[in-house]
Image 1 (cartoon, rainbow, N blue to C red):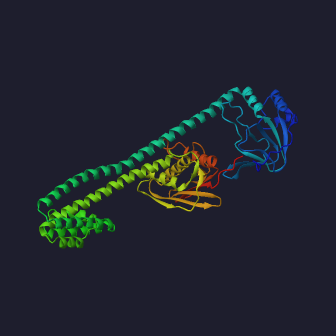
Image 2: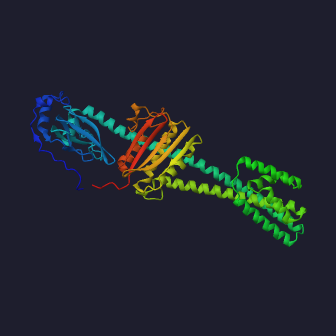
Image 3: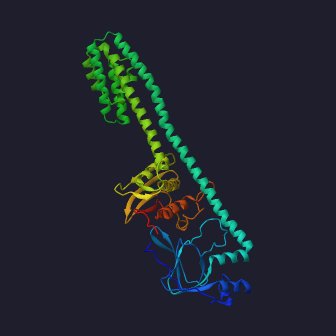
Length: 488
Protein backbone atom coordinates (compact mmCIF):
# COMPACT_ATOMS: atom_id res chain seq x y z
CA UNK A 1 0.00 0.00 0.00
CA UNK A 2 1.42 3.34 -0.98
CA UNK A 3 0.79 5.17 2.29
CA UNK A 4 2.66 2.62 4.44
CA UNK A 5 5.72 4.30 5.94
CA UNK A 6 8.96 2.85 4.64
CA UNK A 7 11.78 1.89 6.99
CA UNK A 8 14.92 3.74 5.87
CA UNK A 9 17.96 2.71 7.91
CA UNK A 10 21.56 3.62 7.37
CA UNK A 11 23.61 0.60 6.26
CA UNK A 12 24.54 -1.65 9.15
CA UNK A 13 28.26 -1.39 9.94
CA UNK A 14 29.82 -4.73 10.95
CA UNK A 15 32.61 -4.99 13.47
CA UNK A 16 32.23 -1.48 14.91
CA UNK A 17 31.72 -2.58 18.53
CA UNK A 18 34.59 -4.40 20.20
CA UNK A 19 34.09 -7.26 22.68
CA UNK A 20 35.05 -4.90 25.49
CA UNK A 21 32.37 -2.41 24.43
CA UNK A 22 29.79 -5.17 24.17
CA UNK A 23 30.61 -6.22 27.75
CA UNK A 24 29.43 -2.78 28.94
CA UNK A 25 25.88 -3.71 27.95
CA UNK A 26 24.07 -5.44 30.83
CA UNK A 27 22.67 -8.08 28.49
CA UNK A 28 26.17 -9.32 27.50
CA UNK A 29 28.23 -8.63 30.63
CA UNK A 30 28.42 -12.30 31.69
CA UNK A 31 29.47 -13.69 28.30
CA UNK A 32 32.95 -15.15 27.79
CA UNK A 33 35.59 -13.41 25.69
CA UNK A 34 35.09 -16.01 22.97
CA UNK A 35 31.33 -15.43 22.95
CA UNK A 36 31.77 -11.66 22.86
CA UNK A 37 34.18 -12.03 19.96
CA UNK A 38 31.65 -14.11 18.02
CA UNK A 39 28.93 -11.58 18.77
CA UNK A 40 31.11 -8.63 17.66
CA UNK A 41 31.82 -10.42 14.39
CA UNK A 42 28.22 -11.38 13.62
CA UNK A 43 26.58 -8.20 14.87
CA UNK A 44 26.64 -4.71 13.45
CA UNK A 45 25.67 -1.17 14.40
CA UNK A 46 23.15 1.04 12.68
CA UNK A 47 22.05 4.62 13.10
CA UNK A 48 18.52 5.95 12.78
CA UNK A 49 17.72 9.68 12.56
CA UNK A 50 15.16 11.27 14.85
CA UNK A 51 11.62 10.29 13.82
CA UNK A 52 12.77 7.23 11.89
CA UNK A 53 10.93 3.92 12.10
CA UNK A 54 13.22 1.09 13.21
CA UNK A 55 10.86 -1.91 13.18
CA UNK A 56 7.17 -2.15 12.30
CA UNK A 57 4.53 -4.14 14.16
CA UNK A 58 3.40 -7.15 12.14
CA UNK A 59 6.52 -7.35 9.94
CA UNK A 60 8.57 -10.58 10.04
CA UNK A 61 10.89 -10.50 13.08
CA UNK A 62 14.27 -10.59 11.35
CA UNK A 63 16.52 -8.75 13.82
CA UNK A 64 17.36 -8.59 17.51
CA UNK A 65 18.07 -4.95 18.39
CA UNK A 66 19.88 -3.40 21.37
CA UNK A 67 19.79 0.36 22.05
CA UNK A 68 23.24 1.97 22.31
CA UNK A 69 22.27 5.64 22.47
CA UNK A 70 19.30 7.91 21.88
CA UNK A 71 15.62 7.76 22.86
CA UNK A 72 13.11 5.35 21.41
CA UNK A 73 9.38 4.64 21.77
CA UNK A 74 7.53 1.36 21.32
CA UNK A 75 3.98 1.60 19.99
CA UNK A 76 1.14 -0.78 19.25
CA UNK A 77 -1.81 -0.39 16.95
CA UNK A 78 -5.14 -0.08 18.70
CA UNK A 79 -7.71 0.21 15.98
CA UNK A 80 -6.46 2.99 13.73
CA UNK A 81 -4.37 4.65 16.44
CA UNK A 82 -0.78 4.17 17.56
CA UNK A 83 -0.57 3.78 21.34
CA UNK A 84 2.81 4.31 23.00
CA UNK A 85 3.59 1.48 25.41
CA UNK A 86 7.25 2.24 26.23
CA UNK A 87 9.48 5.33 25.99
CA UNK A 88 13.08 4.92 27.08
CA UNK A 89 16.63 6.07 26.66
CA UNK A 90 18.14 3.32 28.81
CA UNK A 91 21.27 1.98 27.16
CA UNK A 92 21.14 -1.76 26.59
CA UNK A 93 17.38 -2.25 26.36
CA UNK A 94 16.51 -4.80 23.70
CA UNK A 95 13.58 -5.64 21.45
CA UNK A 96 12.75 -7.31 18.15
CA UNK A 97 13.22 -11.03 17.48
CA UNK A 98 13.25 -11.97 21.15
CA UNK A 99 11.75 -15.43 20.46
CA UNK A 100 14.02 -16.41 17.60
CA UNK A 101 15.42 -19.23 19.77
CA UNK A 102 12.11 -21.15 19.70
CA UNK A 103 12.05 -24.18 17.42
CA UNK A 104 10.35 -23.75 14.06
CA UNK A 105 6.77 -24.90 14.67
CA UNK A 106 5.20 -23.21 11.68
CA UNK A 107 4.04 -20.20 13.69
CA UNK A 108 5.18 -16.96 12.01
CA UNK A 109 7.48 -14.76 14.12
CA UNK A 110 6.44 -11.15 13.71
CA UNK A 111 7.32 -7.98 15.56
CA UNK A 112 4.80 -7.43 18.35
CA UNK A 113 5.27 -3.64 18.35
CA UNK A 114 6.69 -0.81 16.30
CA UNK A 115 9.84 1.04 17.39
CA UNK A 116 10.59 4.63 16.47
CA UNK A 117 13.64 6.74 17.22
CA UNK A 118 12.61 9.93 19.00
CA UNK A 119 16.13 11.32 18.71
CA UNK A 120 19.14 10.37 16.63
CA UNK A 121 19.77 6.84 17.87
CA UNK A 122 22.32 4.07 17.49
CA UNK A 123 21.68 0.34 17.79
CA UNK A 124 23.56 -2.92 17.91
CA UNK A 125 21.80 -5.49 15.74
CA UNK A 126 22.05 -9.27 15.35
CA UNK A 127 20.03 -11.18 12.76
CA UNK A 128 17.24 -13.39 14.06
CA UNK A 129 19.02 -16.47 12.71
CA UNK A 130 22.29 -15.65 14.49
CA UNK A 131 20.52 -14.70 17.71
CA UNK A 132 18.54 -17.94 17.67
CA UNK A 133 21.73 -19.96 17.05
CA UNK A 134 23.72 -18.38 19.88
CA UNK A 135 20.88 -18.83 22.35
CA UNK A 136 20.45 -22.52 21.51
CA UNK A 137 24.19 -23.25 21.43
CA UNK A 138 25.32 -21.22 24.44
CA UNK A 139 22.38 -21.74 26.79
CA UNK A 140 20.85 -25.14 25.93
CA UNK A 141 19.34 -25.80 29.34
CA UNK A 142 17.80 -22.33 29.55
CA UNK A 143 16.40 -22.75 26.04
CA UNK A 144 14.78 -26.05 26.97
CA UNK A 145 13.14 -24.33 29.93
CA UNK A 146 12.07 -21.32 27.88
CA UNK A 147 10.72 -23.49 25.08
CA UNK A 148 8.84 -25.61 27.56
CA UNK A 149 7.42 -22.50 29.18
CA UNK A 150 6.40 -20.91 25.87
CA UNK A 151 4.94 -24.06 24.37
CA UNK A 152 3.31 -25.03 27.65
CA UNK A 153 1.63 -21.65 27.98
CA UNK A 154 0.46 -21.84 24.37
CA UNK A 155 -0.92 -25.34 24.85
CA UNK A 156 -2.53 -24.39 28.15
CA UNK A 157 -4.10 -21.32 26.64
CA UNK A 158 -5.44 -23.34 23.72
CA UNK A 159 -6.80 -26.08 25.99
CA UNK A 160 -8.32 -23.68 28.49
CA UNK A 161 -9.70 -21.56 25.68
CA UNK A 162 -11.35 -24.63 24.16
CA UNK A 163 -12.67 -25.65 27.57
CA UNK A 164 -14.01 -22.16 28.11
CA UNK A 165 -15.79 -22.22 24.76
CA UNK A 166 -17.26 -25.64 25.57
CA UNK A 167 -18.33 -24.46 29.02
CA UNK A 168 -19.90 -21.35 27.52
CA UNK A 169 -21.65 -23.47 24.90
CA UNK A 170 -22.91 -25.83 27.59
CA UNK A 171 -24.19 -22.96 29.71
CA UNK A 172 -25.88 -21.33 26.73
CA UNK A 173 -27.39 -24.66 25.65
CA UNK A 174 -28.73 -25.27 29.15
CA UNK A 175 -30.17 -21.78 29.22
CA UNK A 176 -31.70 -22.20 25.78
CA UNK A 177 -33.27 -25.54 26.78
CA UNK A 178 -34.68 -23.88 29.88
CA UNK A 179 -36.11 -21.02 27.84
CA UNK A 180 -37.54 -23.44 25.24
CA UNK A 181 -39.08 -25.70 27.88
CA UNK A 182 -41.38 -22.99 29.26
CA UNK A 183 -43.26 -22.14 26.03
CA UNK A 184 -43.20 -25.79 24.92
CA UNK A 185 -44.81 -26.89 28.20
CA UNK A 186 -47.34 -24.03 27.95
CA UNK A 187 -48.26 -25.10 24.42
CA UNK A 188 -48.70 -28.71 25.56
CA UNK A 189 -50.94 -27.67 28.47
CA UNK A 190 -53.01 -25.39 26.25
CA UNK A 191 -53.41 -28.12 23.62
CA UNK A 192 -54.65 -30.58 26.23
CA UNK A 193 -57.14 -28.06 27.62
CA UNK A 194 -58.24 -27.12 24.11
CA UNK A 195 -59.06 -30.73 23.30
CA UNK A 196 -61.35 -30.89 26.36
CA UNK A 197 -63.07 -27.59 25.50
CA UNK A 198 -63.71 -28.58 21.90
CA UNK A 199 -65.25 -31.85 23.09
CA UNK A 200 -67.46 -29.92 25.53
CA UNK A 201 -68.51 -27.55 22.75
CA UNK A 202 -69.58 -30.51 20.60
CA UNK A 203 -71.67 -31.87 23.45
CA UNK A 204 -73.19 -28.45 24.14
CA UNK A 205 -74.04 -27.97 20.48
CA UNK A 206 -75.76 -31.36 20.51
CA UNK A 207 -77.82 -30.34 23.54
CA UNK A 208 -78.81 -27.09 21.87
CA UNK A 209 -79.93 -28.98 18.79
CA UNK A 210 -81.78 -31.61 20.89
CA UNK A 211 -83.58 -28.81 22.71
CA UNK A 212 -85.42 -28.05 19.54
CA UNK A 213 -84.04 -24.56 19.29
CA UNK A 214 -85.63 -22.70 16.45
CA UNK A 215 -83.27 -22.22 13.48
CA UNK A 216 -83.52 -18.44 13.72
CA UNK A 217 -82.60 -18.61 17.42
CA UNK A 218 -79.64 -20.87 16.71
CA UNK A 219 -78.48 -18.54 13.96
CA UNK A 220 -78.82 -15.58 16.34
CA UNK A 221 -76.85 -17.50 18.96
CA UNK A 222 -74.03 -18.17 16.48
CA UNK A 223 -73.96 -14.49 15.53
CA UNK A 224 -73.83 -13.51 19.19
CA UNK A 225 -70.94 -15.91 19.71
CA UNK A 226 -68.94 -14.33 16.91
CA UNK A 227 -69.71 -10.81 18.17
CA UNK A 228 -68.58 -11.69 21.70
CA UNK A 229 -65.37 -13.27 20.42
CA UNK A 230 -64.66 -10.22 18.24
CA UNK A 231 -65.35 -7.89 21.17
CA UNK A 232 -63.00 -9.94 23.36
CA UNK A 233 -60.25 -9.69 20.74
CA UNK A 234 -60.54 -5.89 20.72
CA UNK A 235 -60.94 -5.38 24.47
CA UNK A 236 -58.15 -3.48 26.25
CA UNK A 237 -55.81 -5.31 28.58
CA UNK A 238 -56.90 -5.21 32.22
CA UNK A 239 -54.84 -5.10 35.37
CA UNK A 240 -55.06 -7.94 37.86
CA UNK A 241 -57.25 -5.80 40.14
CA UNK A 242 -59.58 -4.81 37.28
CA UNK A 243 -59.90 -8.46 36.21
CA UNK A 244 -60.74 -9.54 39.77
CA UNK A 245 -63.43 -6.83 40.09
CA UNK A 246 -64.89 -7.83 36.72
CA UNK A 247 -65.01 -11.50 37.77
CA UNK A 248 -66.99 -10.55 40.88
CA UNK A 249 -69.45 -8.47 38.89
CA UNK A 250 -69.94 -11.20 36.28
CA UNK A 251 -70.33 -13.87 38.96
CA UNK A 252 -73.06 -11.88 40.71
CA UNK A 253 -74.84 -11.26 37.36
CA UNK A 254 -74.85 -14.98 36.56
CA UNK A 255 -75.84 -15.93 40.12
CA UNK A 256 -78.91 -13.66 39.90
CA UNK A 257 -79.99 -15.52 36.72
CA UNK A 258 -79.24 -18.98 38.11
CA UNK A 259 -76.57 -19.75 35.55
CA UNK A 260 -75.17 -23.22 36.23
CA UNK A 261 -71.62 -22.94 37.58
CA UNK A 262 -71.66 -19.19 36.96
CA UNK A 263 -68.70 -18.48 39.24
CA UNK A 264 -66.61 -20.95 37.20
CA UNK A 265 -67.61 -19.36 33.89
CA UNK A 266 -67.17 -15.75 35.05
CA UNK A 267 -63.29 -15.81 34.97
CA UNK A 268 -63.41 -16.86 31.29
CA UNK A 269 -65.57 -13.86 30.36
CA UNK A 270 -63.48 -11.55 32.55
CA UNK A 271 -60.29 -12.78 30.90
CA UNK A 272 -61.84 -11.86 27.55
CA UNK A 273 -62.80 -8.39 28.78
CA UNK A 274 -66.55 -9.11 28.55
CA UNK A 275 -68.53 -7.05 31.08
CA UNK A 276 -72.09 -7.32 32.45
CA UNK A 277 -73.39 -4.81 29.90
CA UNK A 278 -72.41 -7.18 27.13
CA UNK A 279 -74.09 -10.12 28.86
CA UNK A 280 -77.25 -8.05 29.44
CA UNK A 281 -77.33 -7.22 25.73
CA UNK A 282 -76.88 -10.92 24.94
CA UNK A 283 -79.76 -11.78 27.32
CA UNK A 284 -82.10 -9.29 25.69
CA UNK A 285 -81.30 -10.51 22.19
CA UNK A 286 -81.92 -14.13 23.12
CA UNK A 287 -85.24 -13.30 24.79
CA UNK A 288 -85.31 -16.80 26.22
CA UNK A 289 -84.39 -17.41 29.89
CA UNK A 290 -84.27 -21.18 29.36
CA UNK A 291 -81.75 -20.71 26.50
CA UNK A 292 -79.56 -18.24 28.40
CA UNK A 293 -77.83 -20.85 30.59
CA UNK A 294 -76.73 -23.00 27.67
CA UNK A 295 -75.79 -19.97 25.57
CA UNK A 296 -73.58 -18.58 28.35
CA UNK A 297 -71.71 -21.87 28.66
CA UNK A 298 -71.42 -22.34 24.89
CA UNK A 299 -70.06 -18.83 24.38
CA UNK A 300 -67.79 -19.39 27.40
CA UNK A 301 -66.35 -22.48 25.72
CA UNK A 302 -65.82 -20.50 22.52
CA UNK A 303 -64.05 -17.72 24.44
CA UNK A 304 -61.85 -20.17 26.29
CA UNK A 305 -61.03 -21.92 23.02
CA UNK A 306 -59.90 -18.63 21.50
CA UNK A 307 -57.82 -17.85 24.57
CA UNK A 308 -56.19 -21.29 24.46
CA UNK A 309 -55.39 -20.91 20.77
CA UNK A 310 -53.85 -17.52 21.53
CA UNK A 311 -51.77 -19.15 24.26
CA UNK A 312 -50.59 -21.82 21.81
CA UNK A 313 -49.77 -19.15 19.22
CA UNK A 314 -47.80 -17.14 21.78
CA UNK A 315 -45.93 -20.22 23.01
CA UNK A 316 -45.00 -21.48 19.56
CA UNK A 317 -44.08 -17.94 18.54
CA UNK A 318 -41.77 -17.78 21.55
CA UNK A 319 -40.14 -21.07 20.52
CA UNK A 320 -39.68 -19.74 16.99
CA UNK A 321 -38.21 -16.51 18.34
CA UNK A 322 -35.74 -18.41 20.54
CA UNK A 323 -34.64 -20.61 17.64
CA UNK A 324 -34.23 -17.52 15.47
CA UNK A 325 -32.17 -15.82 18.20
CA UNK A 326 -30.00 -18.93 18.55
CA UNK A 327 -29.35 -18.91 14.79
CA UNK A 328 -28.56 -15.20 14.89
CA UNK A 329 -26.22 -15.75 17.82
CA UNK A 330 -24.29 -18.61 16.24
CA UNK A 331 -24.71 -17.42 12.63
CA UNK A 332 -24.75 -21.03 11.48
CA UNK A 333 -26.54 -20.08 8.27
CA UNK A 334 -24.41 -17.06 7.34
CA UNK A 335 -21.02 -16.19 5.96
CA UNK A 336 -18.20 -15.68 8.45
CA UNK A 337 -17.54 -12.06 7.46
CA UNK A 338 -20.32 -9.72 6.38
CA UNK A 339 -21.93 -6.34 6.85
CA UNK A 340 -24.11 -6.51 9.94
CA UNK A 341 -26.46 -4.50 12.12
CA UNK A 342 -24.73 -4.69 15.50
CA UNK A 343 -28.08 -4.48 17.31
CA UNK A 344 -29.15 -7.89 15.97
CA UNK A 345 -26.19 -9.55 17.67
CA UNK A 346 -26.76 -7.65 20.91
CA UNK A 347 -30.43 -8.66 21.01
CA UNK A 348 -29.74 -12.33 20.25
CA UNK A 349 -27.04 -12.39 22.94
CA UNK A 350 -29.46 -10.95 25.51
CA UNK A 351 -31.97 -13.67 24.60
CA UNK A 352 -29.35 -16.37 24.95
CA UNK A 353 -28.22 -15.01 28.34
CA UNK A 354 -31.71 -14.32 29.69
CA UNK A 355 -31.43 -17.18 32.21
CA UNK A 356 -28.16 -15.72 33.55
CA UNK A 357 -29.39 -12.15 33.67
CA UNK A 358 -32.41 -13.16 35.74
CA UNK A 359 -35.16 -11.01 37.21
CA UNK A 360 -32.88 -9.03 39.53
CA UNK A 361 -31.13 -7.17 36.71
CA UNK A 362 -32.94 -4.43 34.84
CA UNK A 363 -31.80 -4.24 31.22
CA UNK A 364 -31.78 -0.73 29.74
CA UNK A 365 -31.29 -0.43 25.97
CA UNK A 366 -30.27 2.90 24.49
CA UNK A 367 -29.79 2.07 20.82
CA UNK A 368 -29.12 4.48 17.99
CA UNK A 369 -31.06 2.67 15.29
CA UNK A 370 -29.82 5.12 12.66
CA UNK A 371 -26.28 3.72 12.83
CA UNK A 372 -25.16 2.09 9.57
CA UNK A 373 -24.04 -1.51 9.25
CA UNK A 374 -20.42 -2.42 9.92
CA UNK A 375 -18.10 -5.05 8.42
CA UNK A 376 -17.57 -7.79 11.00
CA UNK A 377 -17.44 -11.44 11.94
CA UNK A 378 -20.83 -11.61 13.73
CA UNK A 379 -20.24 -14.86 15.62
CA UNK A 380 -16.96 -13.48 17.02
CA UNK A 381 -18.58 -10.20 18.09
CA UNK A 382 -21.36 -12.17 19.78
CA UNK A 383 -18.64 -13.87 21.83
CA UNK A 384 -17.45 -10.41 22.88
CA UNK A 385 -20.98 -9.34 23.89
CA UNK A 386 -21.39 -12.62 25.81
CA UNK A 387 -18.18 -12.11 27.78
CA UNK A 388 -18.92 -8.47 28.62
CA UNK A 389 -22.56 -9.00 29.58
CA UNK A 390 -21.75 -12.10 31.62
CA UNK A 391 -19.01 -10.21 33.49
CA UNK A 392 -21.36 -7.29 34.14
CA UNK A 393 -24.07 -9.54 35.59
CA UNK A 394 -21.54 -11.33 37.80
CA UNK A 395 -20.08 -8.01 38.97
CA UNK A 396 -23.56 -6.96 40.15
CA UNK A 397 -24.16 -10.34 41.84
CA UNK A 398 -27.37 -10.61 39.84
CA UNK A 399 -28.92 -7.36 41.14
CA UNK A 400 -28.59 -3.97 39.44
CA UNK A 401 -28.95 -2.26 36.08
CA UNK A 402 -27.34 -3.42 32.85
CA UNK A 403 -27.16 -0.59 30.33
CA UNK A 404 -26.35 -1.24 26.68
CA UNK A 405 -25.83 1.82 24.48
CA UNK A 406 -24.85 2.27 20.86
CA UNK A 407 -23.78 5.56 19.35
CA UNK A 408 -21.48 7.14 16.79
CA UNK A 409 -18.08 8.54 17.69
CA UNK A 410 -16.37 10.09 14.66
CA UNK A 411 -15.80 7.27 12.17
CA UNK A 412 -16.57 4.49 14.64
CA UNK A 413 -19.56 2.76 16.11
CA UNK A 414 -19.42 2.46 19.90
CA UNK A 415 -21.10 -0.24 21.95
CA UNK A 416 -21.13 0.59 25.66
CA UNK A 417 -21.97 -2.19 28.14
CA UNK A 418 -22.31 -0.81 31.65
CA UNK A 419 -23.25 -2.13 35.06
CA UNK A 420 -23.95 -0.70 38.50
CA UNK A 421 -21.55 -3.02 40.30
CA UNK A 422 -18.81 -2.05 42.76
CA UNK A 423 -16.37 -1.03 40.01
CA UNK A 424 -12.85 -2.12 39.09
CA UNK A 425 -9.99 -0.81 41.29
CA UNK A 426 -7.42 1.39 39.46
CA UNK A 427 -4.57 -1.06 40.04
CA UNK A 428 -6.54 -3.81 38.29
CA UNK A 429 -7.93 -1.84 35.32
CA UNK A 430 -4.65 -1.90 33.40
CA UNK A 431 -4.46 -5.69 33.72
CA UNK A 432 -7.99 -6.80 32.83
CA UNK A 433 -7.06 -7.59 29.22
CA UNK A 434 -4.03 -9.70 30.16
CA UNK A 435 -4.24 -13.43 29.39
CA UNK A 436 -5.14 -15.55 32.44
CA UNK A 437 -5.75 -12.52 34.66
CA UNK A 438 -8.98 -12.85 36.61
CA UNK A 439 -10.50 -11.53 39.81
CA UNK A 440 -12.96 -14.40 40.07
CA UNK A 441 -12.54 -17.22 42.61
CA UNK A 442 -10.70 -20.37 41.59
CA UNK A 443 -12.87 -22.46 39.32
CA UNK A 444 -15.13 -19.60 38.25
CA UNK A 445 -12.94 -17.89 35.69
CA UNK A 446 -10.10 -18.70 33.32
CA UNK A 447 -8.90 -15.15 32.78
CA UNK A 448 -9.30 -15.54 29.04
CA UNK A 449 -12.67 -13.86 28.40
CA UNK A 450 -11.42 -10.28 28.16
CA UNK A 451 -8.17 -11.32 26.47
CA UNK A 452 -10.16 -13.11 23.77
CA UNK A 453 -12.51 -10.15 23.50
CA UNK A 454 -9.57 -7.77 23.12
CA UNK A 455 -8.01 -9.85 20.35
CA UNK A 456 -11.34 -10.19 18.51
CA UNK A 457 -12.04 -6.45 18.62
CA UNK A 458 -8.51 -5.08 18.12
CA UNK A 459 -6.78 -7.70 16.00
CA UNK A 460 -9.78 -9.14 14.23
CA UNK A 461 -11.80 -6.00 13.55
CA UNK A 462 -9.35 -3.10 13.74
CA UNK A 463 -11.29 -1.63 16.64
CA UNK A 464 -10.62 -0.71 20.25
CA UNK A 465 -11.93 -1.83 23.64
CA UNK A 466 -11.53 0.25 26.77
CA UNK A 467 -12.64 0.17 30.40
CA UNK A 468 -14.04 3.10 32.38
CA UNK A 469 -14.95 2.34 35.96
CA UNK A 470 -15.98 3.89 39.21
CA UNK A 471 -18.20 2.49 41.98
CA UNK A 472 -21.72 2.11 40.62
CA UNK A 473 -20.74 2.84 37.02
CA UNK A 474 -18.47 0.45 35.11
CA UNK A 475 -18.48 0.54 31.32
CA UNK A 476 -16.68 -1.40 28.63
CA UNK A 477 -16.52 0.65 25.43
CA UNK A 478 -16.12 -1.31 22.22
CA UNK A 479 -15.27 0.88 19.22
CA UNK A 480 -15.66 -0.63 15.76
CA UNK A 481 -14.86 1.05 12.44
CA UNK A 482 -17.64 1.71 9.93
CA UNK A 483 -15.33 0.96 7.01
CA UNK A 484 -13.39 -2.13 6.00
CA UNK A 485 -9.78 -1.99 7.22
CA UNK A 486 -7.40 -0.92 4.48
CA UNK A 487 -5.47 -3.77 2.91
CA UNK A 488 -1.72 -3.49 2.67
